Image (cartoon, rainbow, N blue to C red; front, side, top):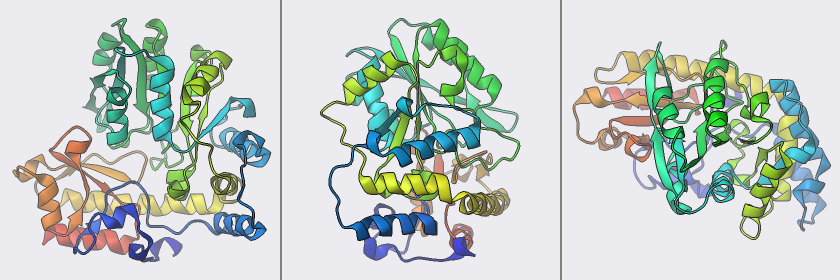
Length: 375
């Protein structure tokens, strides 16, 4: 029942809700959910603010938060890491931009799996690098990487880095062991560093899918950057906390050097929230996944009944990548907004014929969105 609760975010300057301020449009775009944080997270934040001091806290010194990450990865993925491998960053966006600086020189090329969310698409150009798109293809009812293109482009000596989302955003696929091995083989063979954005990895909805952290693959010898966070799963993105797991000392030192003087420390409240999320919220996490599976089933069934729309159900995330090419309209985004629904524009991710709907919301909100689309 907690996920059915509608909480008014309009007075809170919410990024999601500000976009359509003053308009009768349901905001189903940016990737945060409409769910209240788990009570243990709120309690931890309350206790810290009651203490009354908000001075500097070096993330490496927050032993409890670091141990929480170590324990979470062991329990969820059987990945045994050392706390020394953790590099805290105030979000994955600065982290993959740091990776561009750390492992590339101006003029080098960076491969980006596409479609992908806008900040990731923008990262190579921001850092004076050339972006090489590696598209996705449909296979057996799901999206996967175009491995022929990946192999071809990785052979270019100018390509130094491959940034991939796993689970993929916006298409929602979870890389299988076989697919991750193919990526590994290609990157190792061509001396390409892999940066894997795994911010949605704790949101696996397909019970037959299993997330495998890139940093766990032995063939990389630890020379891989794995980006994770509690932010999407536990709806604490506004606190600004994520972490990179980098086993190899040299690779980690290069990352840290590139971040110096630019990337600020993660805040003490973000560390407290991450600790609580990874140690006290297992039941809430399980209930969240059950609720999101129900939302996805509902959305999938309804989209199937709407002429002109097609959805390959995502294996993970709370995001649905919907093909609207069958509508026969020039601007699918405007089509949905005119009906009172505000998805993310597909053109921002690399394909104007798609829209992305965030179904991380109370079921009643999703039902209202469907009713508006059908009207």
